Image (cartoon, rainbow, N blue to C red; front, side):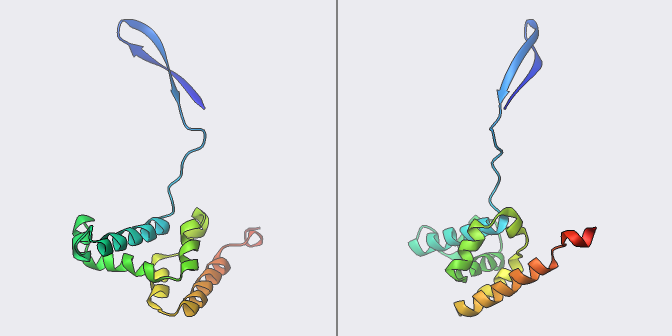
Length: 135
């Protein structure tokens, strides 16, 4: 897409400038995907020694240690749940809450996690308004 507009230029009454914009706007990854990626990055940095401790990571990120603990809890999710979060569409991601995911992540057994996650997803699908409800 190309946009043309007029701007007064020095010494010239009229001057046309052309600005090119990207064809398709680049959207940000859903918030939960960014938080999960951050959890993996911080965890890897602490394990590698790049960051000395989780406390230091919290200080560097300007967040509380408690908030960092909440974020890091997400690395305990079953791999397929993490994959779903990372590749979810913005609409799918909006239907999930971080609080629900932390509740799932507190369960250590991945089979139970999957059952809990499926229940949350079913509840969210059931709570979405249907087309026939609005007519």
